[in-house]
View 1 (cartoon, one colour):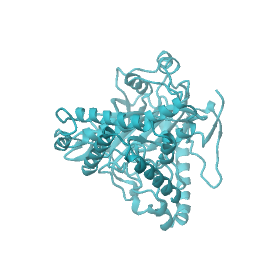
View 2 (cartoon, one colour):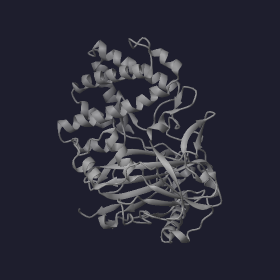
View 3 (spheres, one colour):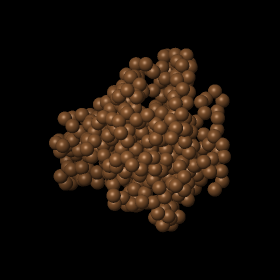
View 4 (cartoon, helix red, strand yellow):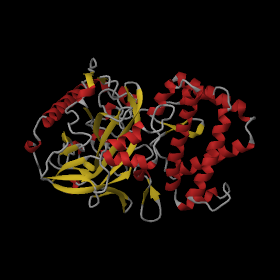
Length: 492
């Protein structure tokens, strides 16, 4: 902490020394950002999906971009790294501007030469962002200062763990986790027709018209794609949608009550609600490392109205629930591994391609990674099929065709960004997540029981970027080294 304070104070001092040399236009741009931040904080519309860079209001970061700072070997890579952080900030601020009340936009009339609308305010924002970036790029030591400040906070509170007896509580929690792992392995070793059913199996499939997997399409978006200086494909929005459509999963859900029907997230009388008459899965693209190389991932997030019913442990029941499936590709576009979690970050497990794994890494004094199933044969020509139990919403089976005769319902795909700026029906928009990355109107009793684990609001549903996936130890769903730290992969 002392080192961090010294670094920050040093950078602050540098800013002050150079303040007299800042052109009037740059000072005006910084004033614009300060005004925007004031309104965003006043109306509590800060997007928690990315993390601000102190002293650089036009940049935001995440765990992948934080990790990339040790891999910048050329001036082109340094500049691209900054450009990605600038783009991350622009995307987050665009949502924040959209989520501001219409009346608040009036505060910007002195900053723009047109009516204050989300579009005109964003245009002014983009101009100010470019102006500050170009000015700062001329400053000596610019990239070193960014690296010193590029620190993504984790989802664990060391203070909570120290003062609330984490070392003692970790023992029974570790034992309970081990028992949960055994339950998962038993589920996944049980034929799907023998799994306990509370209601009736229902297949939720991508709606007709969504494009299935073809090798030609994969070649177009991987092998033939233009690459950036990090080696990542540069896709159009249409190509991102194509990827999402090709790998959209089938969810074979045990439906006993309405809380087993996932659906569109909406505002209903000012509260987050699930419209299960309109099944929706939300998708987004992210990045990680595989065998040390930057790679692409596509994630699918679905939401239920609550966790309830006899299957769910009583301490875990409460409003709103969800699952996320993530599929990770190698640089050639082959699926190497998938993983699943509940949207609180709990019950995370891996589904690797067996032919690509040389070893599962077992760390001393830690539970081994949970691998209850391997990627099913038939992928990617056939869609992955997840069998989910009633009420508790745990994945009990992974296949490509779980039950052919189950009733089938179609679902739609929507971008995850919709959750972060969702129409309220009265002309306003709002994120369904708080400024701390917690889903609004989500609630559990678990924080009163597992407080010593050091995860604030443990058990609550969370926004992407805020998932702690271990109760004992520290780990994040968005750790870009997650796969390389848990598996040795065969050369391919």
